[in-house]
Image: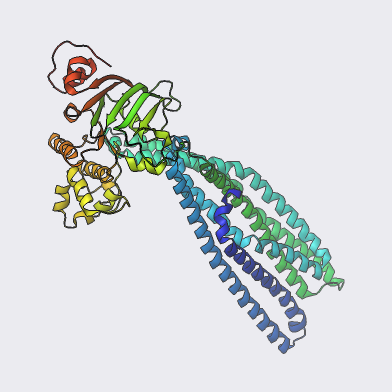
Length: 578
Protein backbone atom coordinates (compact mmCIF):
# COMPACT_ATOMS: atom_id res chain seq x y z
CA UNK A 1 0.00 0.00 0.00
CA UNK A 2 3.03 2.31 0.33
CA UNK A 3 3.09 2.78 -3.45
CA UNK A 4 -0.42 4.27 -3.24
CA UNK A 5 0.62 7.13 -0.92
CA UNK A 6 1.25 9.75 -3.67
CA UNK A 7 -2.37 9.31 -4.81
CA UNK A 8 -3.76 9.33 -1.25
CA UNK A 9 -1.77 12.39 -0.13
CA UNK A 10 -3.98 15.13 -1.72
CA UNK A 11 -7.01 13.66 0.08
CA UNK A 12 -5.20 12.75 3.29
CA UNK A 13 -6.80 15.65 5.15
CA UNK A 14 -10.27 14.36 4.24
CA UNK A 15 -9.42 10.83 5.36
CA UNK A 16 -8.01 12.15 8.67
CA UNK A 17 -11.18 14.24 9.17
CA UNK A 18 -13.37 11.19 8.49
CA UNK A 19 -11.32 9.13 10.95
CA UNK A 20 -11.63 11.83 13.63
CA UNK A 21 -15.40 12.11 13.17
CA UNK A 22 -15.68 8.32 13.36
CA UNK A 23 -13.58 8.35 16.54
CA UNK A 24 -15.77 11.02 18.09
CA UNK A 25 -18.86 9.01 17.18
CA UNK A 26 -17.32 5.91 18.79
CA UNK A 27 -16.65 7.81 22.05
CA UNK A 28 -20.24 9.07 22.30
CA UNK A 29 -21.49 5.59 21.41
CA UNK A 30 -19.54 4.13 24.34
CA UNK A 31 -21.22 6.52 26.77
CA UNK A 32 -24.76 5.35 25.95
CA UNK A 33 -24.58 1.88 27.68
CA UNK A 34 -22.84 3.49 30.67
CA UNK A 35 -25.70 5.95 31.04
CA UNK A 36 -28.20 3.14 30.57
CA UNK A 37 -26.66 1.36 33.59
CA UNK A 38 -26.95 4.54 35.64
CA UNK A 39 -30.59 4.88 34.52
CA UNK A 40 -31.38 1.36 35.74
CA UNK A 41 -29.54 1.64 39.06
CA UNK A 42 -30.43 5.21 40.04
CA UNK A 43 -33.66 5.81 38.20
CA UNK A 44 -35.69 2.67 37.63
CA UNK A 45 -34.50 0.89 40.81
CA UNK A 46 -35.38 3.91 42.99
CA UNK A 47 -38.44 5.01 40.99
CA UNK A 48 -37.25 8.61 40.57
CA UNK A 49 -39.09 9.91 37.49
CA UNK A 50 -36.98 13.07 37.26
CA UNK A 51 -33.77 11.00 37.05
CA UNK A 52 -35.30 8.76 34.38
CA UNK A 53 -36.34 11.75 32.20
CA UNK A 54 -32.93 13.44 32.50
CA UNK A 55 -31.02 10.27 31.59
CA UNK A 56 -33.37 9.49 28.68
CA UNK A 57 -32.88 12.98 27.24
CA UNK A 58 -29.12 12.70 27.69
CA UNK A 59 -29.08 9.35 25.90
CA UNK A 60 -31.24 10.74 23.07
CA UNK A 61 -28.81 13.66 22.69
CA UNK A 62 -25.82 11.31 22.55
CA UNK A 63 -27.60 9.14 19.96
CA UNK A 64 -28.21 12.15 17.70
CA UNK A 65 -24.61 13.35 18.11
CA UNK A 66 -23.30 9.86 17.26
CA UNK A 67 -25.53 9.69 14.17
CA UNK A 68 -24.34 13.14 13.04
CA UNK A 69 -20.67 12.23 13.43
CA UNK A 70 -21.15 8.95 11.54
CA UNK A 71 -23.09 10.54 8.66
CA UNK A 72 -20.47 13.26 8.25
CA UNK A 73 -17.60 10.75 8.43
CA UNK A 74 -19.24 8.40 5.91
CA UNK A 75 -19.87 11.22 3.46
CA UNK A 76 -16.30 12.53 3.64
CA UNK A 77 -14.71 9.07 3.43
CA UNK A 78 -16.87 8.04 0.46
CA UNK A 79 -15.96 11.19 -1.46
CA UNK A 80 -12.25 10.95 -0.61
CA UNK A 81 -11.89 7.29 -1.58
CA UNK A 82 -13.77 7.83 -4.84
CA UNK A 83 -11.35 10.62 -5.75
CA UNK A 84 -8.35 8.48 -4.78
CA UNK A 85 -9.64 5.62 -6.94
CA UNK A 86 -10.09 8.06 -9.81
CA UNK A 87 -6.51 9.34 -9.43
CA UNK A 88 -5.05 5.82 -9.36
CA UNK A 89 -7.05 4.75 -12.44
CA UNK A 90 -6.00 7.89 -14.34
CA UNK A 91 -2.36 7.38 -13.34
CA UNK A 92 -2.45 3.75 -14.47
CA UNK A 93 -4.10 4.56 -17.79
CA UNK A 94 -1.73 7.47 -18.48
CA UNK A 95 1.30 5.33 -17.66
CA UNK A 96 0.08 2.46 -19.85
CA UNK A 97 -0.31 4.89 -22.76
CA UNK A 98 3.38 5.81 -22.42
CA UNK A 99 4.61 2.23 -22.55
CA UNK A 100 5.91 0.62 -25.72
CA UNK A 101 4.34 -2.48 -27.23
CA UNK A 102 7.23 -4.48 -25.78
CA UNK A 103 6.40 -3.20 -22.29
CA UNK A 104 2.70 -3.99 -22.71
CA UNK A 105 3.49 -7.49 -23.97
CA UNK A 106 5.35 -8.21 -20.72
CA UNK A 107 2.15 -7.89 -18.69
CA UNK A 108 -0.48 -8.75 -21.33
CA UNK A 109 -3.54 -6.64 -22.13
CA UNK A 110 -6.18 -8.62 -20.13
CA UNK A 111 -4.07 -8.32 -17.00
CA UNK A 112 -3.77 -4.57 -17.56
CA UNK A 113 -7.56 -4.31 -17.84
CA UNK A 114 -8.01 -6.23 -14.57
CA UNK A 115 -5.50 -4.02 -12.78
CA UNK A 116 -7.08 -0.76 -13.95
CA UNK A 117 -10.57 -1.91 -12.90
CA UNK A 118 -10.74 -4.79 -10.41
CA UNK A 119 -7.50 -4.12 -8.50
CA UNK A 120 -8.17 -0.40 -8.14
CA UNK A 121 -11.64 -1.24 -6.83
CA UNK A 122 -10.13 -3.46 -4.09
CA UNK A 123 -7.76 -0.69 -2.99
CA UNK A 124 -10.60 1.84 -2.98
CA UNK A 125 -12.88 -0.39 -0.88
CA UNK A 126 -10.11 -1.06 1.62
CA UNK A 127 -9.40 2.65 2.05
CA UNK A 128 -13.11 3.24 2.59
CA UNK A 129 -13.25 0.55 5.27
CA UNK A 130 -10.09 1.86 6.92
CA UNK A 131 -11.47 5.39 7.23
CA UNK A 132 -14.71 4.06 8.68
CA UNK A 133 -13.39 1.43 11.09
CA UNK A 134 -9.64 1.93 11.52
CA UNK A 135 -10.16 4.21 14.56
CA UNK A 136 -13.72 3.32 15.52
CA UNK A 137 -13.03 -0.40 16.02
CA UNK A 138 -9.98 0.07 18.30
CA UNK A 139 -11.77 2.82 20.28
CA UNK A 140 -14.80 0.59 20.77
CA UNK A 141 -12.59 -2.35 21.82
CA UNK A 142 -10.17 -0.47 24.07
CA UNK A 143 -12.79 1.94 25.41
CA UNK A 144 -15.19 -0.90 26.14
CA UNK A 145 -12.49 -2.80 28.06
CA UNK A 146 -11.50 0.28 30.07
CA UNK A 147 -15.11 1.07 31.04
CA UNK A 148 -15.71 -2.60 31.89
CA UNK A 149 -12.65 -2.53 34.15
CA UNK A 150 -14.10 0.48 35.94
CA UNK A 151 -17.39 -1.39 36.46
CA UNK A 152 -16.02 -4.82 37.42
CA UNK A 153 -12.39 -5.99 36.93
CA UNK A 154 -13.25 -9.67 37.56
CA UNK A 155 -15.81 -9.94 34.74
CA UNK A 156 -13.44 -8.01 32.46
CA UNK A 157 -10.99 -10.92 32.67
CA UNK A 158 -13.62 -13.10 30.98
CA UNK A 159 -13.88 -10.51 28.20
CA UNK A 160 -10.10 -10.61 27.75
CA UNK A 161 -10.22 -14.38 27.20
CA UNK A 162 -12.95 -13.93 24.56
CA UNK A 163 -10.88 -11.26 22.79
CA UNK A 164 -7.81 -13.51 22.68
CA UNK A 165 -9.81 -16.42 21.23
CA UNK A 166 -11.36 -14.14 18.62
CA UNK A 167 -7.95 -12.66 17.68
CA UNK A 168 -6.41 -16.09 17.18
CA UNK A 169 -9.30 -17.22 14.94
CA UNK A 170 -9.12 -14.02 12.88
CA UNK A 171 -5.37 -14.10 12.29
CA UNK A 172 -5.55 -17.77 11.28
CA UNK A 173 -8.11 -16.97 8.58
CA UNK A 174 -6.06 -13.96 7.42
CA UNK A 175 -2.88 -16.00 6.93
CA UNK A 176 -4.70 -18.74 5.03
CA UNK A 177 -6.71 -16.47 2.70
CA UNK A 178 -3.90 -14.09 1.70
CA UNK A 179 -2.24 -16.44 -0.87
CA UNK A 180 -5.66 -17.62 -2.07
CA UNK A 181 -6.66 -14.07 -3.05
CA UNK A 182 -3.45 -13.77 -5.07
CA UNK A 183 -4.47 -16.87 -7.03
CA UNK A 184 -7.98 -15.43 -7.45
CA UNK A 185 -6.59 -12.32 -9.17
CA UNK A 186 -4.41 -14.42 -11.49
CA UNK A 187 -7.42 -16.59 -12.41
CA UNK A 188 -9.46 -13.45 -13.15
CA UNK A 189 -6.66 -12.28 -15.47
CA UNK A 190 -6.91 -15.51 -17.45
CA UNK A 191 -10.71 -15.27 -17.52
CA UNK A 192 -10.46 -11.72 -18.88
CA UNK A 193 -8.09 -12.97 -21.59
CA UNK A 194 -10.59 -15.58 -22.77
CA UNK A 195 -13.48 -13.08 -22.62
CA UNK A 196 -11.53 -10.50 -24.61
CA UNK A 197 -10.53 -13.05 -27.25
CA UNK A 198 -14.11 -14.25 -27.52
CA UNK A 199 -15.51 -10.76 -28.03
CA UNK A 200 -12.84 -9.52 -30.46
CA UNK A 201 -12.87 -12.76 -32.47
CA UNK A 202 -16.61 -13.40 -32.44
CA UNK A 203 -16.82 -13.33 -36.25
CA UNK A 204 -14.11 -15.97 -36.56
CA UNK A 205 -15.76 -18.09 -33.86
CA UNK A 206 -19.12 -18.02 -35.61
CA UNK A 207 -17.61 -18.56 -39.06
CA UNK A 208 -15.86 -21.74 -37.92
CA UNK A 209 -18.76 -22.84 -35.71
CA UNK A 210 -16.58 -22.82 -32.59
CA UNK A 211 -19.13 -21.26 -30.23
CA UNK A 212 -19.43 -24.45 -28.19
CA UNK A 213 -15.65 -24.73 -27.87
CA UNK A 214 -15.33 -21.11 -26.65
CA UNK A 215 -18.21 -21.56 -24.21
CA UNK A 216 -16.49 -24.62 -22.75
CA UNK A 217 -13.18 -22.78 -22.53
CA UNK A 218 -14.81 -19.83 -20.74
CA UNK A 219 -16.78 -22.16 -18.45
CA UNK A 220 -13.63 -24.08 -17.51
CA UNK A 221 -11.76 -20.91 -16.53
CA UNK A 222 -14.84 -19.56 -14.77
CA UNK A 223 -14.88 -22.72 -12.67
CA UNK A 224 -11.23 -22.10 -11.83
CA UNK A 225 -12.11 -18.63 -10.50
CA UNK A 226 -15.08 -20.14 -8.65
CA UNK A 227 -12.84 -22.79 -7.05
CA UNK A 228 -10.44 -20.21 -5.59
CA UNK A 229 -13.24 -17.85 -4.55
CA UNK A 230 -15.08 -20.71 -2.83
CA UNK A 231 -11.91 -21.76 -1.05
CA UNK A 232 -11.35 -18.24 0.28
CA UNK A 233 -15.06 -17.88 1.05
CA UNK A 234 -15.06 -21.17 2.94
CA UNK A 235 -12.37 -19.98 5.34
CA UNK A 236 -14.08 -16.60 5.69
CA UNK A 237 -17.37 -18.43 6.38
CA UNK A 238 -15.84 -19.86 9.55
CA UNK A 239 -15.57 -16.33 10.91
CA UNK A 240 -19.26 -15.54 11.48
CA UNK A 241 -20.15 -18.71 13.42
CA UNK A 242 -16.84 -18.45 15.33
CA UNK A 243 -17.64 -14.87 16.26
CA UNK A 244 -21.17 -15.81 17.34
CA UNK A 245 -19.93 -18.78 19.36
CA UNK A 246 -17.20 -16.82 21.16
CA UNK A 247 -19.50 -13.84 21.81
CA UNK A 248 -22.35 -15.93 23.21
CA UNK A 249 -20.00 -18.07 25.30
CA UNK A 250 -18.42 -14.91 26.74
CA UNK A 251 -21.85 -13.44 27.58
CA UNK A 252 -22.96 -16.75 29.15
CA UNK A 253 -19.85 -16.95 31.33
CA UNK A 254 -20.21 -13.28 32.33
CA UNK A 255 -23.86 -13.76 33.28
CA UNK A 256 -23.01 -16.93 35.20
CA UNK A 257 -20.24 -15.20 37.14
CA UNK A 258 -22.25 -12.03 37.66
CA UNK A 259 -24.87 -14.03 39.62
CA UNK A 260 -22.30 -14.80 42.29
CA UNK A 261 -21.08 -11.19 42.22
CA UNK A 262 -24.62 -9.86 42.76
CA UNK A 263 -25.21 -12.27 45.64
CA UNK A 264 -21.96 -11.09 47.23
CA UNK A 265 -23.13 -7.45 46.87
CA UNK A 266 -20.15 -6.54 44.65
CA UNK A 267 -22.22 -5.81 41.53
CA UNK A 268 -25.48 -4.07 40.66
CA UNK A 269 -28.06 -5.08 38.03
CA UNK A 270 -27.49 -1.98 35.90
CA UNK A 271 -23.76 -2.68 35.69
CA UNK A 272 -24.45 -6.23 34.47
CA UNK A 273 -26.60 -4.78 31.68
CA UNK A 274 -23.83 -2.29 30.83
CA UNK A 275 -21.09 -4.95 30.78
CA UNK A 276 -23.16 -7.21 28.48
CA UNK A 277 -23.59 -4.27 26.10
CA UNK A 278 -19.86 -3.63 26.22
CA UNK A 279 -19.17 -7.29 25.45
CA UNK A 280 -21.22 -6.97 22.27
CA UNK A 281 -19.46 -3.71 21.37
CA UNK A 282 -15.97 -5.07 22.10
CA UNK A 283 -16.38 -8.34 20.25
CA UNK A 284 -18.19 -6.65 17.37
CA UNK A 285 -15.22 -4.26 17.09
CA UNK A 286 -12.88 -7.24 17.27
CA UNK A 287 -14.67 -8.79 14.29
CA UNK A 288 -14.13 -5.60 12.30
CA UNK A 289 -10.40 -5.71 12.88
CA UNK A 290 -9.81 -9.16 11.27
CA UNK A 291 -12.12 -8.27 8.40
CA UNK A 292 -9.99 -5.19 7.88
CA UNK A 293 -6.95 -7.46 7.82
CA UNK A 294 -8.61 -9.70 5.23
CA UNK A 295 -9.55 -6.75 3.04
CA UNK A 296 -6.10 -5.29 3.57
CA UNK A 297 -4.62 -8.62 2.45
CA UNK A 298 -6.58 -8.51 -0.81
CA UNK A 299 -5.85 -4.80 -1.28
CA UNK A 300 -2.16 -5.41 -0.60
CA UNK A 301 -2.09 -7.96 -3.42
CA UNK A 302 -3.94 -5.52 -5.70
CA UNK A 303 -1.71 -2.57 -4.79
CA UNK A 304 1.38 -4.68 -5.53
CA UNK A 305 -0.07 -5.48 -8.98
CA UNK A 306 -0.80 -1.79 -9.56
CA UNK A 307 2.69 -0.80 -8.40
CA UNK A 308 4.17 -3.39 -10.77
CA UNK A 309 2.71 -1.44 -13.70
CA UNK A 310 3.58 2.02 -12.35
CA UNK A 311 7.17 0.88 -11.72
CA UNK A 312 7.69 -0.22 -15.32
CA UNK A 313 10.00 2.35 -16.84
CA UNK A 314 9.54 3.08 -20.51
CA UNK A 315 12.14 0.92 -22.24
CA UNK A 316 12.40 3.28 -25.21
CA UNK A 317 14.83 6.12 -24.52
CA UNK A 318 14.17 9.29 -26.50
CA UNK A 319 16.65 12.04 -27.25
CA UNK A 320 16.20 15.80 -26.94
CA UNK A 321 16.44 16.88 -30.58
CA UNK A 322 13.37 18.71 -31.90
CA UNK A 323 14.85 20.07 -35.12
CA UNK A 324 15.62 18.37 -38.42
CA UNK A 325 18.90 18.56 -40.31
CA UNK A 326 16.75 19.15 -43.40
CA UNK A 327 18.54 16.60 -45.54
CA UNK A 328 16.91 15.39 -48.72
CA UNK A 329 16.71 11.85 -47.34
CA UNK A 330 13.68 11.54 -45.05
CA UNK A 331 14.14 7.92 -43.94
CA UNK A 332 17.10 5.57 -44.13
CA UNK A 333 17.51 1.99 -42.93
CA UNK A 334 21.15 0.97 -42.47
CA UNK A 335 21.63 -2.81 -42.23
CA UNK A 336 18.67 -3.20 -39.83
CA UNK A 337 17.87 -6.56 -38.24
CA UNK A 338 15.20 -7.31 -35.64
CA UNK A 339 13.85 -10.29 -33.67
CA UNK A 340 10.75 -10.18 -31.48
CA UNK A 341 11.33 -10.88 -27.75
CA UNK A 342 11.55 -14.62 -27.21
CA UNK A 343 11.73 -15.40 -30.93
CA UNK A 344 14.80 -17.41 -32.05
CA UNK A 345 14.72 -16.06 -35.63
CA UNK A 346 14.99 -12.53 -36.97
CA UNK A 347 11.84 -11.00 -38.45
CA UNK A 348 14.01 -8.56 -40.42
CA UNK A 349 17.48 -9.41 -41.71
CA UNK A 350 20.00 -6.72 -42.74
CA UNK A 351 17.49 -4.44 -44.49
CA UNK A 352 18.79 -1.22 -46.07
CA UNK A 353 16.97 1.45 -48.14
CA UNK A 354 16.37 5.21 -48.43
CA UNK A 355 13.26 7.32 -48.92
CA UNK A 356 13.70 10.89 -50.18
CA UNK A 357 11.37 13.87 -49.94
CA UNK A 358 8.43 13.61 -52.31
CA UNK A 359 9.13 9.92 -52.97
CA UNK A 360 6.86 6.93 -52.40
CA UNK A 361 8.50 3.72 -51.28
CA UNK A 362 6.24 0.67 -51.53
CA UNK A 363 6.95 -2.45 -49.50
CA UNK A 364 5.55 -5.74 -50.73
CA UNK A 365 5.93 -9.33 -49.71
CA UNK A 366 4.09 -12.42 -48.57
CA UNK A 367 2.32 -12.61 -45.22
CA UNK A 368 4.91 -12.80 -42.44
CA UNK A 369 7.70 -11.31 -44.56
CA UNK A 370 8.27 -8.44 -42.09
CA UNK A 371 6.29 -5.57 -43.63
CA UNK A 372 4.43 -4.52 -40.45
CA UNK A 373 7.58 -5.14 -38.38
CA UNK A 374 9.34 -2.56 -40.50
CA UNK A 375 6.61 -0.03 -39.67
CA UNK A 376 6.82 -0.82 -35.94
CA UNK A 377 10.54 -0.06 -35.95
CA UNK A 378 10.00 3.32 -37.62
CA UNK A 379 7.38 4.23 -35.00
CA UNK A 380 9.78 3.02 -32.27
CA UNK A 381 7.27 0.52 -30.94
CA UNK A 382 10.29 -1.80 -30.95
CA UNK A 383 14.03 -1.20 -31.19
CA UNK A 384 16.21 -2.80 -33.91
CA UNK A 385 18.50 -5.62 -32.79
CA UNK A 386 21.22 -4.52 -35.22
CA UNK A 387 21.84 -1.57 -37.50
CA UNK A 388 20.36 1.93 -37.27
CA UNK A 389 17.39 3.92 -38.53
CA UNK A 390 17.96 7.54 -39.55
CA UNK A 391 15.31 10.17 -40.02
CA UNK A 392 16.05 13.47 -41.78
CA UNK A 393 19.77 13.26 -41.14
CA UNK A 394 19.65 12.12 -37.50
CA UNK A 395 19.57 8.76 -35.81
CA UNK A 396 15.92 8.21 -34.89
CA UNK A 397 16.93 7.74 -31.23
CA UNK A 398 18.16 11.34 -31.05
CA UNK A 399 14.67 12.82 -31.53
CA UNK A 400 12.34 13.62 -28.65
CA UNK A 401 9.09 11.70 -28.50
CA UNK A 402 7.06 14.79 -29.38
CA UNK A 403 9.24 15.59 -32.40
CA UNK A 404 9.10 12.04 -33.72
CA UNK A 405 5.31 11.87 -33.35
CA UNK A 406 5.04 15.16 -35.20
CA UNK A 407 7.23 14.04 -38.12
CA UNK A 408 5.98 10.47 -38.61
CA UNK A 409 2.40 9.23 -38.81
CA UNK A 410 0.85 5.92 -39.77
CA UNK A 411 -2.44 4.37 -40.82
CA UNK A 412 -2.29 1.00 -39.09
CA UNK A 413 -3.31 -2.31 -40.58
CA UNK A 414 -5.44 -2.85 -37.46
CA UNK A 415 -7.13 0.53 -37.23
CA UNK A 416 -9.25 1.79 -34.35
CA UNK A 417 -12.41 3.86 -34.70
CA UNK A 418 -13.56 5.71 -31.59
CA UNK A 419 -17.12 6.31 -30.44
CA UNK A 420 -17.29 10.01 -31.33
CA UNK A 421 -17.96 12.24 -34.34
CA UNK A 422 -16.24 11.80 -37.71
CA UNK A 423 -14.44 15.11 -37.21
CA UNK A 424 -13.12 14.11 -33.77
CA UNK A 425 -12.03 10.73 -35.15
CA UNK A 426 -9.97 12.47 -37.82
CA UNK A 427 -8.40 15.35 -35.89
CA UNK A 428 -7.94 13.45 -32.56
CA UNK A 429 -7.63 16.55 -30.36
CA UNK A 430 -5.22 18.36 -32.69
CA UNK A 431 -5.64 21.98 -33.76
CA UNK A 432 -8.73 22.21 -35.92
CA UNK A 433 -8.39 23.60 -39.44
CA UNK A 434 -11.43 23.22 -41.68
CA UNK A 435 -9.55 23.32 -45.00
CA UNK A 436 -7.06 20.77 -43.73
CA UNK A 437 -9.88 18.53 -42.51
CA UNK A 438 -11.70 18.60 -45.86
CA UNK A 439 -8.50 17.99 -47.83
CA UNK A 440 -7.60 14.94 -45.76
CA UNK A 441 -11.17 13.58 -46.05
CA UNK A 442 -11.27 14.10 -49.84
CA UNK A 443 -7.82 12.56 -50.29
CA UNK A 444 -8.90 9.53 -48.24
CA UNK A 445 -12.01 9.17 -50.48
CA UNK A 446 -14.42 9.44 -47.53
CA UNK A 447 -15.94 12.82 -48.50
CA UNK A 448 -18.67 11.18 -50.60
CA UNK A 449 -20.01 9.44 -47.51
CA UNK A 450 -19.75 12.59 -45.37
CA UNK A 451 -21.67 14.67 -47.93
CA UNK A 452 -24.53 12.16 -47.83
CA UNK A 453 -24.91 12.45 -44.05
CA UNK A 454 -27.19 15.08 -42.53
CA UNK A 455 -24.67 15.93 -39.81
CA UNK A 456 -21.66 15.75 -42.15
CA UNK A 457 -18.49 15.81 -40.00
CA UNK A 458 -20.61 15.90 -36.81
CA UNK A 459 -22.07 12.46 -37.49
CA UNK A 460 -21.73 10.29 -34.38
CA UNK A 461 -19.89 7.03 -34.97
CA UNK A 462 -20.77 4.08 -32.73
CA UNK A 463 -18.11 2.43 -30.60
CA UNK A 464 -15.65 0.51 -32.81
CA UNK A 465 -17.45 1.96 -35.84
CA UNK A 466 -20.21 -0.65 -35.85
CA UNK A 467 -22.44 1.66 -37.90
CA UNK A 468 -19.85 1.87 -40.71
CA UNK A 469 -18.56 -0.64 -43.26
CA UNK A 470 -14.99 -1.93 -43.22
CA UNK A 471 -13.98 0.27 -46.15
CA UNK A 472 -15.52 3.39 -44.58
CA UNK A 473 -13.67 2.79 -41.30
CA UNK A 474 -10.40 2.26 -43.15
CA UNK A 475 -10.81 5.49 -45.10
CA UNK A 476 -11.48 7.43 -41.88
CA UNK A 477 -8.27 5.93 -40.51
CA UNK A 478 -6.40 7.13 -43.62
CA UNK A 479 -7.95 10.61 -43.31
CA UNK A 480 -6.78 10.73 -39.67
CA UNK A 481 -3.24 9.94 -40.84
CA UNK A 482 -3.26 12.49 -43.65
CA UNK A 483 -4.58 15.24 -41.35
CA UNK A 484 -1.27 15.17 -39.47
CA UNK A 485 0.64 16.34 -42.61
CA UNK A 486 3.76 14.60 -41.33
CA UNK A 487 7.06 14.45 -43.20
CA UNK A 488 6.67 10.68 -43.50
CA UNK A 489 3.29 9.00 -43.91
CA UNK A 490 3.07 5.23 -43.48
CA UNK A 491 0.09 3.46 -45.02
CA UNK A 492 0.06 -0.15 -43.84
CA UNK A 493 -2.12 -2.24 -46.15
CA UNK A 494 -4.83 0.44 -46.25
CA UNK A 495 -6.19 -0.96 -49.53
CA UNK A 496 -7.25 -4.29 -47.99
CA UNK A 497 -10.87 -3.15 -47.58
CA UNK A 498 -10.94 -0.87 -50.65
CA UNK A 499 -11.92 -1.72 -54.21
CA UNK A 500 -9.36 -1.17 -56.97
CA UNK A 501 -10.98 2.05 -58.19
CA UNK A 502 -11.04 3.68 -54.73
CA UNK A 503 -7.48 2.51 -54.13
CA UNK A 504 -6.36 4.16 -57.39
CA UNK A 505 -8.10 7.44 -56.54
CA UNK A 506 -6.52 7.41 -53.05
CA UNK A 507 -3.01 7.02 -54.47
CA UNK A 508 -3.65 9.72 -57.09
CA UNK A 509 -4.88 12.12 -54.38
CA UNK A 510 -1.75 11.47 -52.31
CA UNK A 511 0.52 12.43 -55.21
CA UNK A 512 -1.59 15.49 -56.03
CA UNK A 513 -2.31 16.92 -52.56
CA UNK A 514 0.77 15.97 -50.58
CA UNK A 515 3.69 16.82 -52.84
CA UNK A 516 7.01 16.96 -51.07
CA UNK A 517 5.91 14.46 -48.41
CA UNK A 518 7.51 11.03 -48.23
CA UNK A 519 5.16 8.02 -48.25
CA UNK A 520 5.86 4.47 -47.14
CA UNK A 521 3.18 2.28 -48.70
CA UNK A 522 2.86 -1.27 -47.38
CA UNK A 523 0.65 -3.53 -49.48
CA UNK A 524 0.21 -6.99 -50.94
CA UNK A 525 -1.38 -5.70 -54.15
CA UNK A 526 0.75 -5.21 -57.25
CA UNK A 527 -1.81 -2.65 -58.48
CA UNK A 528 -1.21 -0.56 -55.36
CA UNK A 529 2.60 -0.53 -55.49
CA UNK A 530 3.44 -0.51 -59.20
CA UNK A 531 3.28 3.30 -59.47
CA UNK A 532 5.68 3.88 -56.54
CA UNK A 533 9.08 5.50 -57.07
CA UNK A 534 10.73 2.48 -55.46
CA UNK A 535 9.46 -0.93 -54.44
CA UNK A 536 11.11 -2.94 -51.67
CA UNK A 537 10.48 -6.70 -51.89
CA UNK A 538 10.69 -8.62 -48.62
CA UNK A 539 10.91 -12.38 -48.34
CA UNK A 540 11.21 -14.07 -44.94
CA UNK A 541 12.47 -10.81 -43.45
CA UNK A 542 15.20 -10.20 -46.04
CA UNK A 543 15.22 -7.53 -48.75
CA UNK A 544 15.41 -9.48 -52.02
CA UNK A 545 14.58 -6.67 -54.39
CA UNK A 546 14.63 -2.85 -54.61
CA UNK A 547 13.70 -0.80 -57.64
CA UNK A 548 10.84 0.30 -59.86
CA UNK A 549 8.11 -2.03 -61.07
CA UNK A 550 9.76 -2.45 -64.46
CA UNK A 551 13.20 -3.13 -62.93
CA UNK A 552 11.83 -5.72 -60.52
CA UNK A 553 9.84 -7.44 -63.26
CA UNK A 554 13.12 -7.93 -65.12
CA UNK A 555 15.41 -8.73 -62.21
CA UNK A 556 13.57 -10.08 -59.12
CA UNK A 557 12.10 -13.57 -59.22
CA UNK A 558 10.26 -13.11 -55.89
CA UNK A 559 8.50 -10.04 -57.32
CA UNK A 560 7.72 -11.92 -60.51
CA UNK A 561 6.12 -14.70 -58.44
CA UNK A 562 3.89 -12.18 -56.69
CA UNK A 563 2.91 -10.75 -60.08
CA UNK A 564 2.02 -14.18 -61.39
CA UNK A 565 -0.24 -14.93 -58.41
CA UNK A 566 -2.11 -11.70 -59.15
CA UNK A 567 -2.45 -12.37 -62.90
CA UNK A 568 0.10 -9.70 -63.91
CA UNK A 569 1.98 -10.61 -67.09
CA UNK A 570 5.73 -10.99 -66.65
CA UNK A 571 8.47 -11.87 -69.16
CA UNK A 572 10.33 -15.16 -68.77
CA UNK A 573 13.90 -15.29 -67.47
CA UNK A 574 15.85 -12.83 -65.33
CA UNK A 575 17.49 -13.09 -61.96
CA UNK A 576 16.65 -11.71 -58.56
CA UNK A 577 18.81 -8.78 -57.48
CA UNK A 578 18.84 -7.67 -53.82
